[in-house]
Image 1: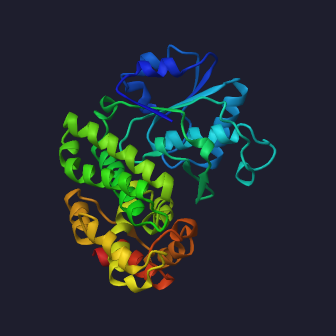
Image 2: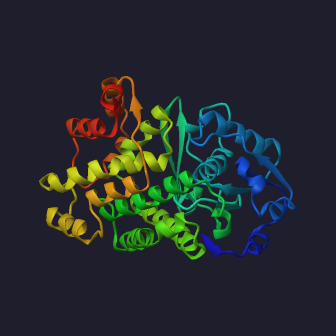
Length: 357
């Protein structure tokens, strides 16, 4: 993967001939790179949700194939880039069977360029994609999904809504933290995680106030957080977040951030349940290295005015949430969380109607 900063002209040097499927949201029309991108032979695909659905991806595959496209350009946040990844992976599969039940053929020959317009998901750095099928999160993870070329342009973040800025930077921060303590961490992933976490903590306030230099640094931090989780994958906060997103319509980054302090606090208090092969003393050292703790993370959520979801059927919702937790991500957590612990964490996250009054 090649990464370029600022220079939109680097896209042209990486485009071959032929037609490209442009995967982008409606905000693309307001971006300063629109004129440059649309001078190429492209077919546009924008028919997907902020939390993309499987059926929407299928329509994108149909457009890619029927349009005889031979490359993909993704311009947008994590949703656009994840949709583009899935279109690339699914385009070589049997259309008469569910794509989720198939393994992609080696389709690295499809050029794939990603231009992120948010700083948070790090999706441009990873082999992972998330889509939803009938309300349930589906993890797609193949090396072939990693973009060939990434162009990071801070100017594209200038007009992001403030709530979206908060959500995506919290996602990047959580990715960095989770990768740092993951049972799959390596010396390389920890260096990426440290770079992401320290940079975000040092720059998020100025970034939210529109500072240009801080925007550049947060965009870079997001890329590092993506590189970190590409090695380790995420842990319990992400595992617990997906159903929160589908049940309450909460943006992904906010959902993960709401889960973070409860999981973190539980791990510190129950370190004897450590399941990292390197042992609990190693994990204690990792927690000590991290420059903030669960209480400080709560302070950040309060500072950013992040509110908890409100439920009319809190107990029933929690039962559903516990039952639908993503086991694949949960197994990467360094401390074992049982159903009772998860129930208590959700209970603290969700505000019942009676609680609110």
